[in-house]
Amino acid sequence: MNSRQKSNPLRPSACPGLLRIVQALDGGICRIKLNGGSIRAQQAVAVADAAERYAGGVIEATNRANLQIRGIGCEQATLINGLLAAGLGPSNAAGDDVRNLMLSPAAGIDRQMLFDTRPLAEQILATVQRNERFHDLSAKFAVQLDGGEALAMLEHPHDLWLSAFERDGERRLAFGLAGCPTDAAAGSVALDDGLGLVVAVLDLFLELARPEQTRMRHLLAEHSIEDFLHRLAERAAIQVATDWRRSPDSSVLHIGAHPQAEAGLVYVGAVPPLGRLNPAMLRGAAQLADEFGDGSLRFTPWQSLLLPNIRNEHGAEVIRRLELLGLLCSTDQPLTRMIACTGSNGCGKSLAETKGDARQLAALLQRHGHALSVHLSGCPRSCAAAHTAPATLLAVAPGHYDLYFRDAAQSGLGALHASNLTIEAVAALLDARSRSPLDA
Image (cartoon, helix red, strand yellow):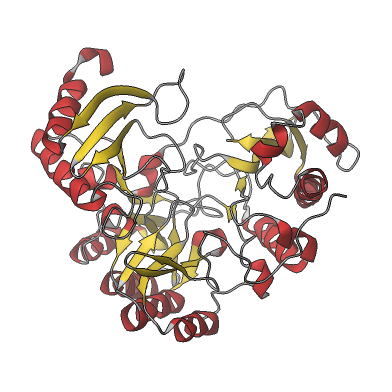
């Protein structure tokens, strides 16, 4: 086994955590990792209180279904202790960084699911937190567990993904490395062997990877996937998955009311404008979860939230009250399709005030009656989106962007369409493209 740096509960990292607050232009950032994206209503109130008392009142929903508090001042320890008291921390300090397991926001309630992923997810999270050897994993090393739900983010690349399917009446988990569930599978295991596979993959990764190889893609650039799988087969009962196919996700299912697996129940999805909530929004959503649901909220990889287990007859009232809070519940609102990074108000690397520009673009597109999926990034790091959006605006100067369109033949942001555009010019180009029969 190669030599790796011993774990430290507060090891240096550019990634914020609950215990490690990272500084930005607008103050400190605290990232609260949510198990399966889920949070109890009283915990949500604790987050709202912390953001209001000890920070700038900005709460962000992230693209991995977590929460962030921005603008934290000097009372960092008090904020952290309050969140720990609410039960939002790891089982031990060194385990905070490795709680990177993403589920469908509709885990356990989705009408299309093949199995409820939550019990297996609990086992995986407990294992990576409990075992010290896994604390050497990067804070960015990520795993996805997909139960076949209709509501699933399948475009985010993960170091390891597992996805449920049925073959000859048996439920199995296809898996892949350094990719997405819509890719070809590296193999499959029986459903009961899911935890063992995760442990085997993580162990093998840590044995083979040098300290600077923090992600699976780094390791596979040096070791062939065939070699990795050959070694993995000595530790797990792997079968080929030549019949593997996972259809792309239906992302609009995270907005509005949608039926659950149990008759008479719906979940209601709402989008905070550009992924940001204020304390009143979060408290209000928590109150609705208590009043109409099961007292829980679920955050999504689309930087939105769900209220699960709402009686069907209460769905319209929940939507009405969420909209009064300032949340968006209709797919025809352009801001529900907008992603924007922090921007120059909070990040020193950003070349533009992306949040304000996104609102301006949304207003222009609303006039044309279009709700297009657009990502605004203040710099090439593309922090706000883990996947390639249909249209991406990359800032080149304040209020000016290069426009890219997603292209399967090109990696990264896609194909460059036009350069140095104002927001007004972007809106005109997007409007013209949406009207073109070639893009219908």
